[in-house]
Length: 211
Image (cartoon, rainbow, N blue to C red; front, side, top):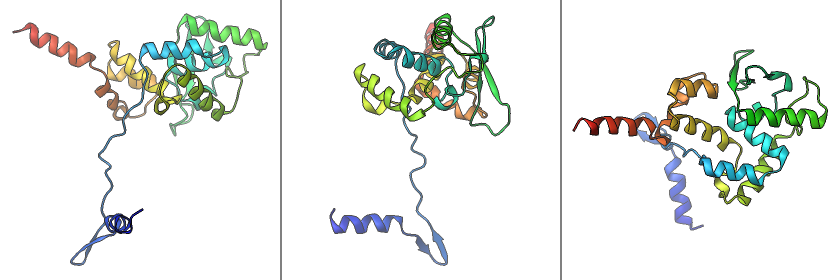
């Protein structure tokens, strides 16, 4: 690297003195990181190219908007067969016994019951057999690339982002989406609004109808 360029980078990070006051240059904190997510078509492609075990994992993470670490803690006993609801423990909240109840599809319910039968599991066993989060990360990359999804979006967390955006696109309000994600503060959910045009489209249609 050019010496002058290195010196310029060092100078940019040095404190600036104005009189007796020392000012530390701030980083560009106001630049929001772009949310990575999948379209419905890309999600279906990912599920189709994955084998049964990983298809269950991706479907579980998507429908419950779970982090992979949360999905790894779901047991068969957390599924209510009558209501089709899964109990998801909110791992990132400090409050003990914090959880959310998420209604799942018959498709996911069937995958869970098939997994329990195939592995001959008890109700207290974990739904996902492999206990290593890294294994799922690598597997997601492999199947995502196989499905034509670029590397920068090849991470299980894109399933959580995708669920939030798809819920908004389906007409769910921001409070419901926040509850589905298990956010303690709704401000954490607001970032997804910029990726969904559902409310904006509706507002524009209503405004245009008045012309």
